[in-house]
Amino acid sequence: MKDSLAWWVTGEGKGDIFPAPIDACPPGFDEPAVSVETLFSGVSRGTESLVYQGQVPVSEYDRMRAPFQQGDFPFPVKYGYANVGRVVSGPAHLEGTAVFCLFPHQTRYRVPAGAVASLPGDLPPARAVLAANMETAINGLWDGAPGIGDRIAVVGLGVVGLLVAWLANRIPGTRVTAVDVNPERQAVAERLGLSFATSVDADDHDLVFHTSGHPSGLNTALELAGPESSIVEMSWYGDTQVEVPLGRTFHSRRLTIKSSQVGQIPPVRQPRWNYQKRMQLALELLRDDALDVLISGESRFSEMPETMARILTDGSQTLCHRIVY
Image 1 (spheres, rainbow, N blue to C red):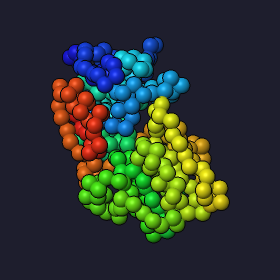
Image 2 (image 1 turned 60 degrees about the horizontal axis):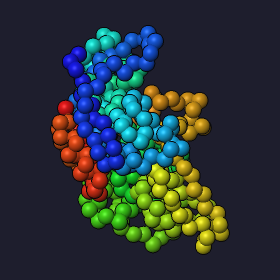
Image 3 (image 1 turned 135 degrees about the vertical axis):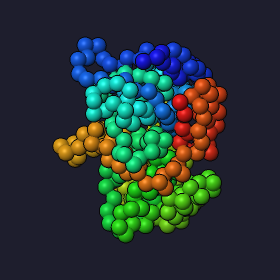
Image 4 (image 1 turned 90 degrees about the horizontal axis):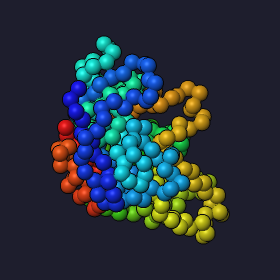
């Protein structure tokens, strides 16, 4: 393969493109490997903005490492996990196929064959950059365990929130309300068949998902929860201190706040599911053309220093930004 280039975060609010080693196989690796030429990568704005701004807490340096990350937090670090490419060499059954890999923003790389997931034949590679977000949404729903007929609110309509609401809305009989203070999210929500609101008065929800990344959104989620119901907290705040109003009706309503994090499959599913099966499910669910609405823009890999400075600093209108190679 030719030489490779990768995007690195080099300091607080700074990043650039540098040459990168192609081989990412671990030392002593003796299993089949694949060489991949990247077609697209996706920017996971919530997490990548925290990395870009140097807001990963020291306590989370190890847990927050991406699978093929290079460098260490806070800087410099090669970080990302939404890479779609085409296999140019490897096992015969994979050569020439389009694959998803939890790999950073890099033009070419070599990884163990087990680290890539083949795309379904009718899934456009350009949409497959949403796979990591879909995995997160699946895990959140597994943690929340919604049922038929549940009244569900999703607070915060970034990519993950919209996917959670879209999936929940496909459960028979559910009443799903997609909530965001940004009225410009309405058009996207409605194109996904969702009922949108900037505020909701009803506090009768059986289940509430919070995905906004803002403490005020968690307060809203608590206000929407009905008696004996649960709030699934899917936001990650980095090193930001969050105040939660646990007075007022929190105890009398016997509410439950449950964390959800994609790095861990819920224990009840671990005997039957693994990360490879969950990824294949995510890719299958992405076959719906309606999900193209979640791609809010795209730019060339060579433009990443300017693009990332813009969308990771003030990208409130950005959903998934796609990088084209």
